[in-house]
Length: 279
Length: 85
Image 1: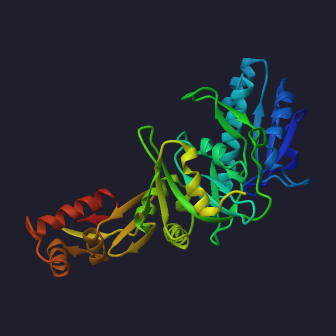
Image 2: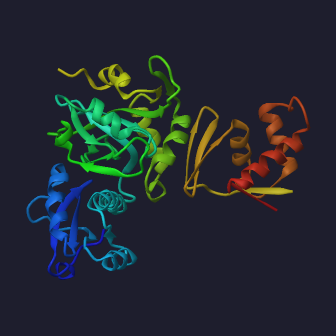
Image 3: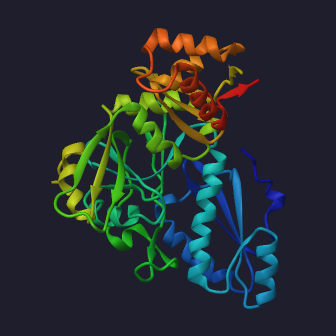
């Protein structure tokens, strides 16, 4: 993991440090509109604030400026820059996420999955699905009253403990739009974990607009589960014994569920069954 | 033709079948393909592999054992799991 040299901090800019998947990441902001970004970031990343004095292990550089040439130059240099603030914040979330995932490469199992947990027991259910197929909607629907663990990346240690990533939610500006607005978890009634989180159920989501009736669940055997899960992992080949560890996790949970459904709300009973009913 | 298995990054076996990781690709192997891989840790002639499969699974219902073995080997080669010589 790369340590950030304090001397490398950008001059005359703003800096906000967040902790993502246990990785302190410095968001360094420059440009004549940097203050607008610096004002929004702590609000959006309210559940990922770094401890005072945390030493950043990675950095994401941001430029927000009225001059389009500054924006173009920043993008060319690999920094995050857009002329529109909401666009910039969306890309920033993606960049922060990928920085944390890269920093954890080879250390732990990372699934492209939403996750929520029971607030009394910390038992969690993770829902694996590709991007744009309903994870954020599921969290917005089913996480109120529970702990919001993540809507993006579920990191599971070998003992089943989950490292929370309660990031800002990326909510589509319009149905089927690629553009999303970053939203603070508390703005949609979500609270981050208040204690340890342990995975109790793992589910592959199969959202289908043509599905009718109650959700249809099947239990995948270990080999089918591996085939379904591996494409939704990050940096898996960089782990030691990656398939064996993933198989051990699946079997420790009693198998992996596949659920075909249409509306997230229809999964409520399943979540109650897997991690406990809300009080 | 002869064949030799190439080691995958990782492998999990359950009930005769297997899943392997080759680079970033996950591959589900049938019991037949798994048996072929296990029978050629070193260079092995296709005739010997076909004989091993007949011993384990019996004669194929259609086609001959050598043709079936060759077809499996071609697929395994395309998946990066064997080299052919």
